[in-house]
Length: 191
Image (tube, rainbow, N blue to C red):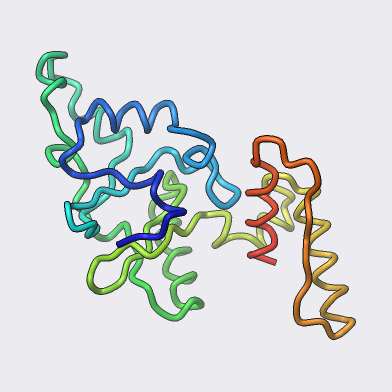
């Protein structure tokens, strides 16, 4: 069982490899392209028919399939090529420890943009991104998406805290396609 905000990042092990390849290389829609302020369309989470996490599928798994002919690729399923290595996921625990483990994992796998967070029963709980784990560092280096959002929200959060408020609201007017709103949510959550 997984949250609805993750549905665009999930693929069944019975799906055709062509569908997975299309989703990885082109993105299904803007939710796939942008997740919590970062592009993570380079990874799909593979689940079985009970929605239990099995592994991940990246474009690199397709490179390993390169010797297949196009007719063989037509019949290839996700369950034949996905990465079953469970060391590239995080088990849900105390958030501070989870962030430390995520930072360590990202240092081992710098090309990974995100990691699945699962519970002990292998249910997918969330996805944690590099920008979440290294938020303060990337904020200081001015390397976050839409830094003007980050600065505004960060300064507003500091002001609210100094004024003894424990909550604040952030609004965006004229959201268009929603990319800015997704970035706004990401910065608000991290600040």
